[in-house]
Length: 616
Image (tube, rainbow, N blue to C red):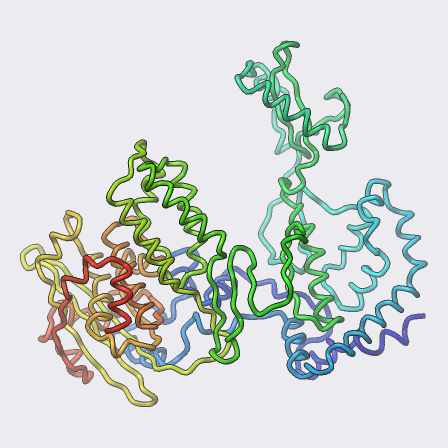
């Protein structure tokens, strides 16, 4: 009898909490299996914009297409007073919210509450012991060995008691979890469309294929190395012994086979590797089913704020409980989370030291091989995850190009990239994740540019500053000086450079207004938009501008959400072409000013640009 245990805490606590909130408490209670767009929203809620316009990671547009200029402007005014997409709260699992609320309300009594919960679980385990023997008896011998540390009886019961949606998991522990083939919806992962195919579809004319493959095998220069390594692998694992192919038909469908020619025997030799578990398509999925279950049990029954990441335990690198630590390559600091409302991140010291060492080695040897460039570029892409905004993404174009070049000589462009990386490391612009709503002033802006063969480039932008319920509307006509065309790479048109330069014009021209603000910037050029969103571009000019913009945003403590606006809806279109003669912005009570770009800024190194932004 277990009924007396099940009708009390901790087994009914989560359900009662859901009912009190008015949430659904009957049926399967599973993690939020987010659809693709929802997953993109979650990433944006981490504080970084990852897509825009037609980019695959873009969120739906903030405003619908097809609006007139007046309609878009009116809706933009309302949108500009709202939190950015990067400020929205992520959608969290209900049991995580439950555990967080218990932590907040019962901080002084968590220990005795958990002790009572663990005591109830131990008593339930004791009463349920006889059920386990019946389940073990139905297991194949190999599975019995693999799951001997799993309490099958208790696992199956807890799945029922917690209304866990993955109801077939207990059966999988008894009969085996799939590692290849088709996985039905388990209820704990997002569903994906799949079309099952038969073995006949996969194998096709396998007789002919196998014959042709064997005929193509020739002795190779690495045969001895492969054979030696294969024998070493076999010595460390459980060898299967010699087996004729006819005894194990279609084995290659379910395992990994390596072929080599053995020179002494003058035959083709095949070895079956059955231990590459995580090389099989469903292995990780099957393992994650258990971690999801344990995560939910920890939250619902033991009242613990726990999130699990599937990886091999490395107990020697474990860290004690602290407000500082590192995980997956990023160091975090939660010491000021409640006072400042943000959690700070920075790449762990070992990664920073690795980057610094690679730069020093390349400079001292005056050599950077394509392979070394690829490794450095990969590390820097990860390094960027711990850096403020997109500051760490730009000025890497020379390193990126070196991956595909035949030369190894260090160039001035590479040295410029190295100086930029070192400047970022010295400045240490930490990534910030808001955990509390922080009040701030806001703005909304739209910009545009045009270029004519006879008159050159023109541009302008309109910005609305919000201070409480008060609005200040300013219009700016950009002075596009001819010297820009000597700086930019030669091309038939430079419209993308003109479009992205408007953001730099604005930040340098009105720094005191942008400082400590958050807002939306609308622009209608996709190339410049994506350069701003990603912090880099295949165009050197666009990447330089994007890097400048993000360095200025860092120095001014400004957050922007870059959004695409159709040209026919762009309320800055007219001022970009007509300048002061545009009647629309005057009718909307925008002031009009000419704004210029300080030429000296275009050549400043990153460290000087960051210092300049801090003092503007």
